[in-house]
Amino acid sequence: MTERVTHLTYEALKSMKEYRNDTIKYCVQILEIEQKNDMNTKNGTLYSCICSDGFAKMNMLILNLSPSILSNTSKMKPIIRILELKIKQTYYLVINYEVLYLDKIQVGQPLPYDDYKKMNFTNPNGNNEIQFPKAPHMFQINENKKQSIQLQQQQKYENDSFDQMQTKSGIKLSINQKQQQFKPIENQIYQSPSDQNILKISELYPGMRGFKIKGRVIQKSDITPFKNNKGHLFTIEIIDSDKQTIQGIFFNTICDKFYDQIEIGKVYYFENGQVKTNRYSTKNQNQSDYQLHFELFSKISLTQDDKDIDVFSFQIKTIEDIDNLSLDDRCDVLGVVIDIKPIIQIMTKSNENKSKKIITLYDQTQRGIDITLWGSQAEKWQFQKDEIVAFRGLKVTDYQTVRSLTVTNSTIYEKDLSHLEKINGFREFYEFYCQNKDFLESKPKESKKKFALSYIEQIKKDFEGIRDNKLVKFYEIKAFITNIFTKQLYYEACENCKRKIIYIQQTKQYNCQNCNLNYDKPCYKYMFNAKIVDTTGNLIVILPDGLGQQVLQVPCEEFQKKSQIEKDDYIKRANFQQQRFLIVAKIETYNDENRPKFYITSIIQDDVISDNEELYNQITQMLKQNN
Figure 1 (tube, rainbow, N blue to C red):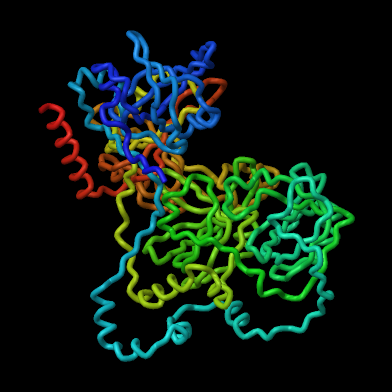
Figure 2: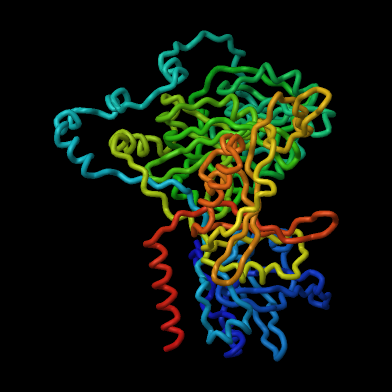
């Protein structure tokens, strides 16, 4: 396995420009692609790109950019390793390269190369360290507390076996878990066994129609309608005695015929259908390369349980391992639920109202990660704190370098301890949890700072004259709020989707056109403009509801009831307080005109230790450059 690249090449652009060195395999980041300036040559297409080493940026020509790079630069900034470089008097041409990462945020706050050179090749806001998303929750074992209790109960712990721990560990079993542990095996009527001419899943190939396999159903989806509402389907996943899996799909009348006949956990004979290529298998570690499309002549018969066919084909990864996965990869995790957020309703980009619930899972690497549940999964899947759960088929997601997981249509979970024991990695986790569950403590949250400290002057400079509505950038700055504009501080909102609602005079009610709901009274949400300043300039920013409450230190529902004098007092107290803001800058269209908008997305608590470390590193770097 190749070593992971963690930094852009230090002073890569200086080496190219000043020393004309074209032999080094530089690692640089592509910040922008000027597609209007692409040129067709006999060797392919040349793209004019702005490339960075984290401290400086300049224009370079790159031959034949891959489609994956071209489709990602609006949100993420790909990082490449230059394999072949030609340096001419007026241009720098990348002939061959390899893509290292597609899903990275901008590294550092690079200056235009000429400005970097004028500053004697220094940039206090520069940085060449590549940010990698990580699971956000960190825990530690309180060793003093653990040793103290262990000394008092040493004799008791020595006599305890693993089986005794299972009842004394204090794990809160759900009602469902307790019932399943003592549930008697029910008598069932089975079809007579017929293992003749049985094929393994690995022996299937695309185009095959006449086949017979034996397998256990380990997953079954709900019936899902097509987007055009002209059909419906459901899917299952089958595992055989070789632990190979394959997906089965049932459309329309076939869906209606078999949906109620198939149960998760049962073993069946599956005969006839069509084997097709599974075009979604590349990102999923569990899915095979093929799918079974069942048809009218297909036959599915229940048979006796087969111990040779595994019940659970989990391939567990620790939360620490998830840091090394790529965006959109699929994975299985095992851990204990330590937090459950209340279910909420959100409006998606497609104007669909969806339920959302977040749970936090912890494992033996002393790390915790958030798992997002959507729709019916958020509503139907019930978990309790301190409950051990295994998830299969979660998707890796990132937001501002914070790693998390989300369920998909193919995700399943298991929380029956008698089944969890059969999963590889369970015993190791269970022993750790039983020994340490009473001594777990959340570490103080690390500084949320994920971007090098920038300045208002730099933000304005980056967006000066820019009209590309795909451009989105994040900045972290220290600034004062000097003026909160009081023309509109809040709005009347829908309780469901939080969008603006209107008052209907005829009905004397408030109507949400988005949800088509009526209310006797609205709820109130902050949304106001403010001016922030630092040593380099000022900027008009927009603060949404949560941050408005954080700045004014009063909920909007209470604020709107205050007198004007009281409101003015809250606003005066909020002014001239220095804060550390994370700002997202983007181009938005209003009345057919593109203009930059700046939103505060979070207010970051200062971390004095990390700030001093950062300042020390910057001073050290400047001293090295001057020597």
